[in-house]
Image 1: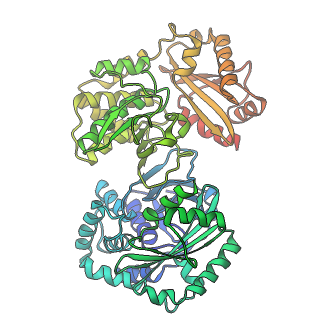
Image 2: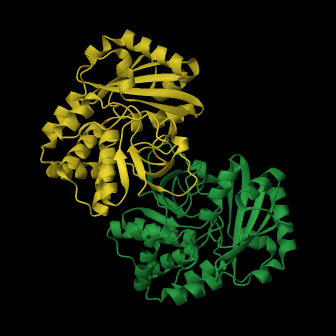
Length: 309
Length: 309
């Protein structure tokens, strides 16, 4: 069987990497020949989860067509979040939990999107549906992905299916998901030893809103005031990247994972900032409080999409 | 629960109508409030299948936003094949077996696409997956859809999953699928009492190929020479529609459902015809033999997509 690569989005998080590993195991059991890879290094939280369940970080690739003709995507579908040469390979499978945007194919494919908190929740169903037993370590990395994406089941993206998957996977993995989950999330909040440039690129995604390009980055912390002490340096880094990459808008969502509140820093051109304010209210000194906002997908992207229309 | 409409593509075939009926029954069992509707009158073959299994033809709609805010799509995703106001409603579910093209959403949704012969094959899995028993008449209309789309399992789009679904559904429906299938297909081949204008619109889909618009229509017959006696009238009808609707290319695939061979009639501008010939070879007097070609999806659309690149 011809080899295929499986990967999540750029600036990978625990879902992008963990679900690629889980999908590759499942597909290989079903007769495919796949390798899970990543479009960037594992972040601190993901590295913690990989180590906990005995995985090496997947190999990092930037392009795919130099290795394979066919790929499978998890946790994303928008071309600008994928390998740079995604138009040169055939996508045969997608498992995702995001909006569908600018994803076009020549032929039918396997595509499963569900409005749940994490791609690993869908993956849990795919294992059950195909009658494939989930190994202990695979259950652990899938559990870690769901904890990460749902902020330990507290994000508004969380569904009953996510809760059920977390309970089932925690049992298979043999961990208490509450205590493990807190450990895992905290592992991703150490911002002290990273530069602002690194932090705004750690979990950042690009979007196109009605012809305008936007970058929406998110960092998790346990101490918002401590993060805000670095505000001026964050803004400078955001301005620099916006200029270099021609972003019309750059938003950095700084989320306290313990109490599920956020502040956002915002830079951009007047038109884009006006759209942002239409969605979220007045930005003062490039800063805005967003109480209760923790989900880029559910509480940021749809609102910006509408505001830019 | 807020009501949602479920429908297949314009110029509906047995899959578009039958799978809408089957999906509505399933979703209502799962707690949704849905109604299956159609974007056009049932064709002869579909009317035969509906009558056989005791269904009324679904209500015909042209727009959805005047009735509901949310819809579910089966057997299509491309906006130009859907209700004219598809951009004014939210698509919450899609079950399909075609390429994905120009389908964009603001939020995540349930989307299941599989490269199988018929949407009802996927629907069969969804019933099993959700542990919902398939009633006898629903099994019958799903069976009819698969027979229609796969030309009684002879189209190259046919997969093992389609075969298994046909066997299982025939058993539930209590019919011999070989003899019923032949009856059903023949019911759709009576072209004598229809005008050329009607025939080229019966099972026709619009596509965009690299900025050019194309109409690809298909009719099923049991006697190709008899159909070709009307060639000049077909060509005139195709020219008239192309002019009225600004199609760059109009292709009519005339398929003998008994021996799985086709002839095509082709009109269009020079550029589009050149692309067509790149894909299929020389067109002589607006006519070309396409032996073995029976599937628009697998044997026409990908080839044209590539030729127009």
